[in-house]
Structures are given as structure tokens and as C-alpha cells.
Length: 284
Image (cartoon, rainbow, N blue to C red):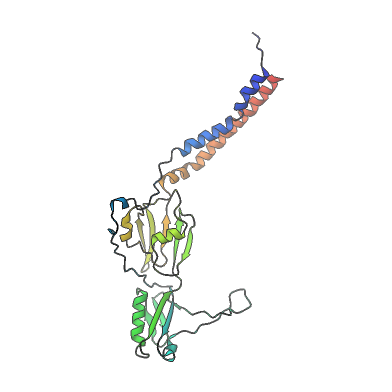
């Protein structure tokens, strides 16, 4: 039996066949992504059942505590500047590494809390400050300095307060804080918010407590986080936001999936080339 081959028919039939490779890859990708579970991205999901003002936070009076390696700026003032001058470290100018010029603007010196939790304060000598809040240290210094100057004012600030945010956030890294009252929500906001694949109900907070590491998980999909002792962050806290199950699954399978796609793509490419040569010969 003889067959008559219509060239136009072959060209029409062959055209979609040329896109078979792309269609195959697209199908595989869609099959993989369709397995993802619905992402849970809403914060404070129980607020609909809570009326305004119903959340009473136990952290209203929270204040960070001083820990070793803190750099404290302590300024003492009073009605008689001469009487309190001896309690203030002089401002100094310094030269940065690699620079030849000394900084023209003097900066305040800081008190470094040593590993034992102590600082050396002018006139008063060694003071154990670890575990104190800024307010407690300020009140303590006022009491001691009152023996030398009338009605002194003492301002204490932690100069190197920092936290670290890692994992599924848009801008991970170490964040330096200008004040010591920062919540986990503030930290997330400073990190550009959580990523789409972040696990919002199991965020890990790592805290250094008297030389021991504490680990606690918090759930920001619930308003109960506002009563958590980890809602307000402390110096050197580390927040790790893990990926949700969908991304973990895709991550585990990604290598295998990419290999399979590569094999399928190679087979389709070879088949396409052979088919092209065959059809080209038939058309001639």
C-alpha cells in the first residue's frame, strides 16, 4: 500500500510536537508545586474572638537586665556640675584602624561589664551590675553618689543592645537596638517580615541565661504570645524562624526532582531531534 505524505499536514502536526519538551517540564513543575499544603500566614488568628482591651499583658513593666559584655553609658549630672564631674568618664577622641586622622568629635566612654558581671566605677570602685535593670542600677548609683553630691541624676543606657534574626525572614542578620524595649514582633518587622514559607506557630527563641542556653518556641498566630516571657527580647537573643513543612518537603526532594527533570528533559530533547531528522527526511 502506498501512502501520500502531505507536507503541510506534517508541518502542522510537527509544530506542537516541537513544544513537547517545554510542556513536559511544565507538567512536572506543576505536579511538584501542586503538592504544597495551604500556607498559614495569618498572625493572631484568635483575635476575632477577643474584644478590644481584653488582652492583659503580664509584660507591661518589662525592662532588660544587664548581662556580661554589655557596654554601659553612664552619665551623672546635678545642680553642682563640679561635684559630680569626678563620676563621669571624660569624652575621648580616637583613631580608627587604618585611618591616619583622629576623630574630631569626642565620644563618651563606656563601661564594659566583665565576665563576672562587674564594672569599675569612678570613686565607688567595683560594682556588680549583672542582673540589674537600668533603673535599678541608676537608683543604686544615685544612693551612693548622694554621699558626695546633692540630688544627683544618673542616666544609664546599654550601648550595644543587639538581637539576631535568622531563617525564613526577608532580611536576616544582627540588629542593633537604640532602646532595650523590643518585642519579637519588632524584631520580625526590622527583618522585613516573615517569608511566605515561614513556620509562624513554632518560632525558636534562644536566650543566654546566666551562662546557660534557654530554648523556647513561640506561636505568633495566637495572641497568647503577648503574655509570653519571650515576647520582649533580651540582649543577645537569637530568633530562628524555621521553614514550614511544605518548604522542608520540597527542599528534601528538590535534588531528586531536579535530577528527574534533567533526565526527562534529555530524553525529550533526544527524541525531538530524532523526530525532527525523521520528518525532515520524509518531507524531502
